[in-house]
Length: 282
Image (cartoon, rainbow, N blue to C red):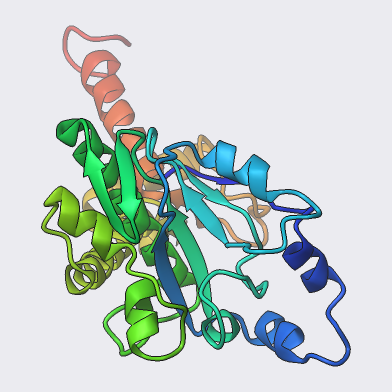
């Protein structure tokens, strides 16, 4: 996921977070506690460029809305437009007090005809744009759930704007399901939540593999038997050094598993090619 910062520093909502009203504790409460959940939006107009919207919203006189992020429909790039623990203006009250909000941009080839209804002049292009924003939203919401230790399948953690309205916590909007349904994408919020969960599991697996690859053997005794004799020989020769003076600890290595494996391979190759054997080097 390509996540970039483009804070709406001129928007009145950002400024209120920087200087919270003394007579309204919702701002400081959100900042101290962070979000309880995450709300997914779709912008409701044919504008695929996140930067066009960011530039338009980043004004001192733009007092109608302020979200935590946009996802570009042309590129799939995600833009963070508020610190995650800032209270936003995205879903109405009380959703703004509990959830952060992210807007998915929409394809340029649709035209709204009334309410949440639209016509589309290029269905393949529109579907490709919706797929890009959906995929990035899955990755972004997985990141947010990891950051705030939330279960995406738990009740109320991930909601659409439409679902927020159905619960009585958000204004009357139909996004983003209206876009997915009319483009025939087959996406649902239940499916989205499951996709976020799967992405989190994928992330956890990748992190575990990365940690295992970066495993550090601090002492020669930690090295697996298949490599230990070679490393002990190199340690005795002073070819490797864990950084501790020999008179204090002569057995420390502080080498990663990958480094040890590569070192042993090179040593064995050198031993086989140039070692003291008949016909070999003296």
